[in-house]
Image (cartoon, rainbow, N blue to C red; front, side, top):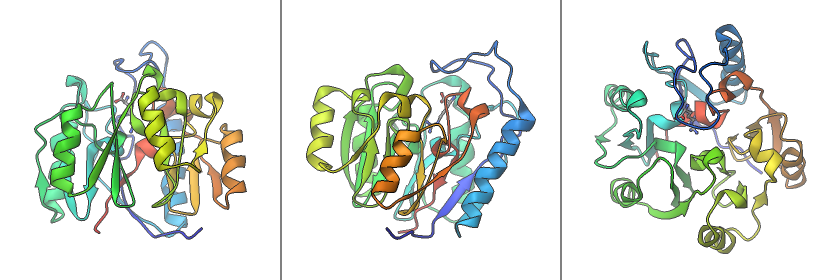
Length: 267
Ligand code: ARG
């Protein structure tokens, strides 16, 4: 297993909170601890830097408590940026904010016509993009992404509302390997995944429920929830290095490690 150094964009959880509910994990009545959220996020950032990756930051905006989930901000492949267009009004302003960051940093940005939540549902895997639909991203965005990013797109149907984004049910480990929780997908999509990735690492329900699949892999090191013990064992057995990162505060909003990280792929 070889790690490839990555460029990542993160957003500090300055305004993080759970003030509305757009997925089954979010309970606005339950208190959040801002200081703990920040400490957990800081640890994620320092782990990434410690592994040799480049971490850049976007300024968080007041009134956007989910902006910490940078993965949803855009999809960047081959130096091209496909902007996000959020399903829910509460997050709508995040799309233009991330698009602006990329424009300012010299990237060409295509403003999306169709609803899509960035890398939450569009995961680059080698030469293809695995694309989720069912809860957030419109299937028409899959075609748009294929055109804009010039990659083959494989559409996958999510069926369990707990796993409303593709990155909560599947993680790309390197160009050819993935891990996923089969029951989060329709029967047809399970067939597609089995055919494309016969040797995939399969997560069990407990791994998925603790958001173990919401993992960040650099091809060797895999940052994931420490509670995903079965998954960590499976990864070690394949030669990956699992690294536990507890983001329990962010889980109250339905997110974990991968949600906080947007990969800036220049090639
Ligand atoms: N509260 C956010 C939402 O429901 C969480 C987003 C998590 N991000 C992710 N990439 N899965 O939109």
